Length: 298
Image (tube, rainbow, N blue to C red; front, side, top):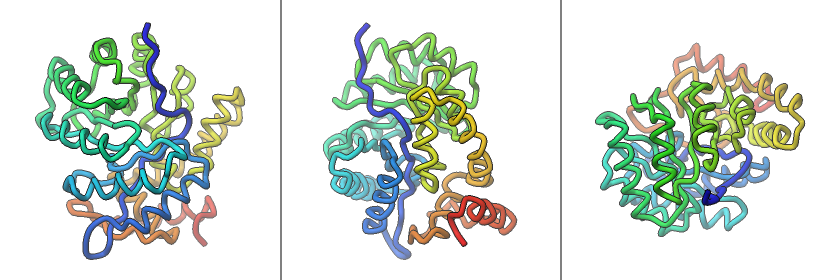
């Protein structure tokens, strides 16, 4: 069996994209967020993924964010760029751009809206894999895309494409994660759900691609590190302690709550782009209470 590249092990943060109040990406604030993450022990940074609102960004804006992240991180941790699309040709353009800008790996979500079949997934991801010479992490999140990638499909893709090296598994189905671990032992599995990181690690997962880590990078890093070092009870307790934050950050559609939380913590992340809107007042109060409980705001 050919050994695949391990992009990272530990906690990877699915970063927000800060915007200026009247324009494009706010790169100085992106720098601040990157340094906050790295000071918290984060093991990888994911830019222009779902949490970064790429659906509202054009390729030139994505290029600004990826290039700045690569420059700022300067090799301290891997920078992973979202490059997924429901249009295969566009996904290839996006992937080539991210690769040329120096991203260490690419994150590719399953096609959404037009969706496709399992055979179509094999063709779609295979076309991107053939077009770029970078490690690829496939992203399965049926709650957002309406399409579930079967473990058998993932095995076919893994067997046929050496640069398909990992999956971000966010189906919420622990049995499916177990089937992936059994069928695809050469693939790294990253939890795509903050509320089930330790269960994924227990199946041999390598870490998490996390939204919660935007606000609690040290907790998430230490939780994964503890589990991988055999301190499973400490990791279990951290998973349980973190659940209220995960609930608060997903009480409305991601990234509405997490971007709101970062603004409350003093990062000038700017507005959400339509169709995302500000939080409902009841949800905002729940979020603020949780931030206070974790001593992130006064």
